[in-house]
Image (cartoon, rainbow, N blue to C red; front, top):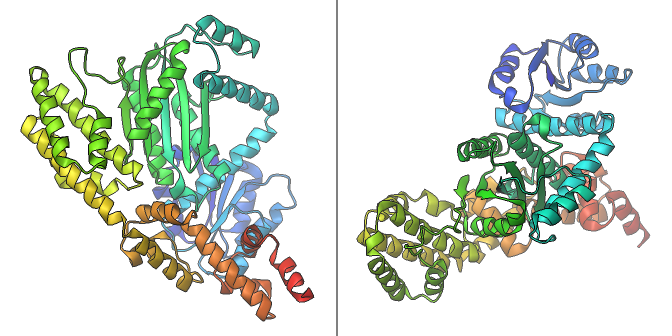
Length: 528
């Protein structure tokens, strides 16, 4: 994929060329021009898929260059740059179907996000235009549907029946092959201000599938992916003979790195042991249990053992359910006694590996309880005291009990604290209601109520049933209604007054919450 940068300020041109991870984005050629006239010639000859262009330039500006493109058949994805925060430039971007426009100066991360959107849009167009794409898409959907049924216990646990079902659908699949099942779970809420659900699914599915299968095999691998309740979940089947645990770890790391770089998201990954098709559904159930317990705010990778996570037939594993029940009932003494007796009973097996398994079980029990109470675990994971005590826990019974004590006190204190958090959301709502006309987001609101942005987002959604962005837009629409009813201001003036810098977006949001466009609302008010 080729990108053309049209920019007369050489320092900005070099900044863009040097700070963007082009190869990681799938872009292998960077072209440049210092004005629109030269840029137009390069577009006509080299046909770059994406053009990043300044609006104000000598000889020919970015707008005139784009207008001249209308005469030809080839149309790249356009990203506009401007040093002026004027509403007319947003209108220009809309008129020419630009992916977005950026106000100078901008951070490289912002351009990476916009480039990602442009790449997604381009790939969708390429898929639609590619010869035979409809048949390819149909085949892909058939394979996904078959794999989804396989994971959901829709077939008997019999390799021969599964083979016949695959054959009936025209799918070449050896049901007796040994495979590994790998699953990803990504909380997408943080990216929903920048991307629609459809765009996020497209981006995440494409990145994960290319990482797992390689670009040349994305149409033939068996996988299923979806976004539901602000969560992207995907399952992939990979041949065991081709994918060692080390290679799986490398692929999971690549996916985690890509998500962090492009979307600032984290992923929880679980890899199974060797399984055959008749074991897929049960293995998926076990993976889901692990994912449910893994409430981590940083990317994580876990492996299923052949015996559902036990450390061996002679070694018991601590009951997470018992620990959670005692914490839930505020029975700290009983929890400590349970742990003491458990350690005494299994003192003959207290090697470092087994103790690490016990420490991990305690950790997941407490994380699971926090998740049950909708508490954010980020602060806990970053607590240096927790890290040190957890590290020492495997050293012996005394340290293990000390760790359990600390975790109990920490978690119960957080639950008590959460009872007063409703007031924090009230403060956040009041701040939004006073400042929605300004350019505000999670960070400004979080600073006001003294909460971490990610935590505030989750808490706000839990308490109000809406995202912060939705609440801001609702406030803006209500104010817009009042102005439509009481003034003769134009829709553009009203849009800017209530906080929108894009009349098209204003109209879309207004219709979403008012059930009609601003013009229709004014007409209705006028008939009263």
